[in-house]
Every structure is written in structure tokens, then in C-alpha cells.
Length: 261
Ligand code: FPP
Image (tube, rainbow, N blue to C red):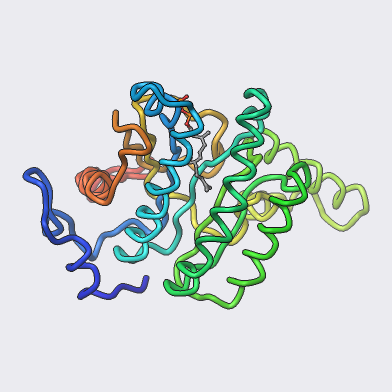
């Protein structure tokens, strides 16, 4: 966990009434925060705009969230940008999102350099349009040497597919005689998931008030604390992030055990 206290304090100056930086314990910042970014469409519709305007506004929230995560000293920020089910959206919306992912990533590369952020992708990238895939590859190559925070973008991600993929890979190893079924344990299974090498999320934030997981990180969220806010994704900002961290720090994480034992 790396953190520049001076930059952090400047970033969190001019606090609103209900929350300020000193409300959180900087020694207990979650290592991995994951976010289901939801509500772009409703944000746009409430303003009489096309849904696409909501996605465009969502980019600004995401940029601020990446910076917030770096300032707070997270090890990993992961976000759910496009699910395996999102292909069912109208074709023009899918096209816009794929284009937005590519253009945003290119535009934000200087930020990733400046903040020493390393990119990761979670999901099956083979199905993505060429433009998106090649920009994603460029992002991976350009940030491979960074050793600050990891920013993991889930695109064409589905947790059930991910679990089936792991089962297939492990079965192949068994079939080839390279693995004894008795040696299959949670650690081995995790190493066949897209998230290999990342710690499980400590905190999951979902915006727009929906109370469901939507096929996101089903394995990895086993002991994660949830924070759901009614705020729509384009309105999510550094203060809302701090409220989520404050709530997380008020929880008693027992991991199935008993407090104090
Ligand atoms: C959910 O809102 C949002 C998405 C499916 C797309 C997420 C995309 C962004 C935040 C844009 C920027 C992302 C990157 C990676 C550059 P929704 O459309 O489901 O909203 P609704 O539930 O109100 O319809």
C-alpha cells in the first residue's frame, strides 16, 4: 500500500457536512475495493438525455474513482464495466460502450503513467471488437512495468463462465495425468480464475440501490463486505467513496469465526 499523505489531504480538502478524511482510519483502508457501476441509464433519462450520455458521464466518475483509490493507497481497484449478459443491450449501445472503453483507455494512459497504475482485465477479451482488444493490449503493454495500484477492468465478464472455465482447465490437467484430483484445493481453483494473483475484494460497492450481484465475482466475494448506495454512478465521487470506506471500517469481519477468539 503506497500513499502520499500530502496529496491525499489536498484531494480531500473542502469536505461536505457529513464526512471528512479524519472520519476514516488510514491504517485500515481496504486493500481491494470492487465496484458495480450502475445507474448510468437512469441518470441520463432523468435529465431527458440519451442513455449514452450517462455512460459518457460515467467516465468522469471512473476517473475520479481511480484517483481516489490511488490517493487512499488501495492495492487493487476493480470495476464491472460490461457483463457477458450486456451483449443483449441494443446494438448501438453495445457499440458505443466498446468504443468508449477503447477511447477512454487511450485517453487515460497518461493518468496511469502519472499515478503508476497497472492495468488488468477480467473477462474473455476474444469476443471484443478488434479496436477495443488492440487498445486493451496496448494498455497492458504500456503499464506492465508499473508497480503501484492495480486497476482491473471487468469486460465481457461473467462469474459463472469464469468458474466453468476454471473447471475445464483443471479437468484437462487431470485428463493429461498432470494433476491428482486430491490436489485440487481452493488455492489451485483460484489460480484458474481471471483474478489470479489478486487478493479477494474486501469491499464491494454497488451504486443505484440495486441489491444483487449480477453474476459478478461469485467465488471471490465469499467474505467481502457490501456497501450499496442509491447514488447513480455518474454522481459517485470521492466523498461517496469515503462514506463506503467509513461504513466498511464500522463492520466486524469475522470470516465465519467469533469475535475476540
Ligand atoms: C451501468 O449502467 C453501466 C454500464 C453497463 C457500463 C459501465 C460503463 C461506464 C461507467 C463507462 C465508462 C467505463 C469505462 C471502462 C471507460 P446502466 O446502463 O445499467 O444503468 P441503468 O441501470 O440505469 O440502465
